[in-house]
Length: 463
Ligand code: NDP
Image (cartoon, rainbow, N blue to C red; front, side, top):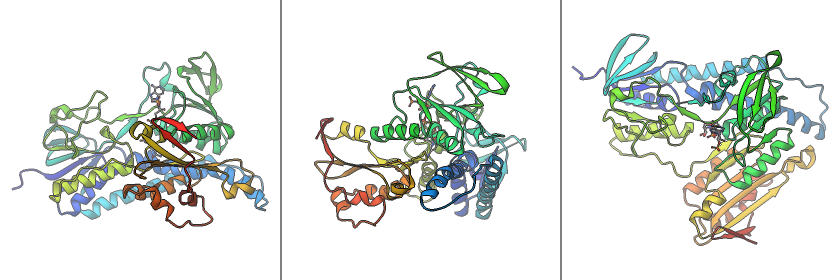
């Protein structure tokens, strides 16, 4: 008789958990997976996918404007929030079904219940009121938006979990934060017609990204009518007139808005998970501590994705699960590779980036060659839009190694994905130079910037 009920029990049906459960079951192992909310996790249900659908929706206002310059005559365009939300829901439901179907076809037992650890090899299933055992347990419970409990009136605010199901499009929205979520939703709402204010505590939005991209995105957002207040913080939120919220800032200004949104980072979903009962340790912020193979401090428990403090991105969680399978079930110890992760911020204009920023590279390399192009994309020569495109290549002057590429403009994410392959293979600038251009594209700039725009020596820019 088997010592355990399952070979693997996965807690959490998001990107990381589903991949681990599905592939392990497909290997013929006995697998169960538990999800307390909806299969698909943050990415599918209330994150990347519905967000990107809303990004598409928000682009149309600019496209309608541009269309006129290309000879189109359009009637009065109007936007219906309910239609977008309903169609988004249909797609999210479809994807949720596919996630469950994939698990079922692989032979995993799919459970709709909250699951909590009650021992190193034991899980309590709340809906079934029963305890099961597993040789290995994978925690993939993800993250949850920070709600700023210290902010007076924070209960009046929404976070990204709620934003996908608002009953109406807010006429006025104020968003706290200067990261991915704050800026993406600022651009979504502005594109859909809302009046948007972003409040950010630091000097410039998108800390950690290349400074050029940060500054130019800020300028482009302001040019679209988004108010961006830096070095400013929320002081309190209270009920305003007519069901609105009254937000007081630390400079004393009061803004009334239909919605006030917090996008100030995310924390791990470990609440009442019973980690201590299984000997699973967390760090100061509550993220589960793992070794280079995603193993926790407990011998039978692993953790992947946003519940660990690594890189909070869907493809990273999936990669971590695939490494777990290689290590534990294929006798091929593989630790996740978190180097050179390409990423996109779906603002308008979009950001795509991979590798070191100019500032980050200057701290590590004595001399850099920076190739920079800032130009009006072909479409905007007649569309009427003044929006420019920015592209940068950061190169180690000594070895010619390409250290980073940064894009601000249409399809930046698509470009970052392909350029990520080049950087991963250790491409030199000379490899970019000997690559033939695809003409006419914006991406061709990457293979036609032959002369450095400037050099950075010991952190100082030279002309
Ligand atoms: P981010 O870490 O990107 O940004 C958080 C922002 O909130 C920062 O600007 C931060 O400021 C600010 N902040 C943090 N604490 C406070 C506070 N107490 N008061 C005021 N401001 C505060 O987190 P997000 O919530 O935007 O997104 C979470 C993660 O989800 C991202 O890091 C990313 O990994 C992932 N994500 C990825 C997307 C994509 O791939 N396109 C889209 C959305 C999310 P400061 O800079 O000063 O610390």
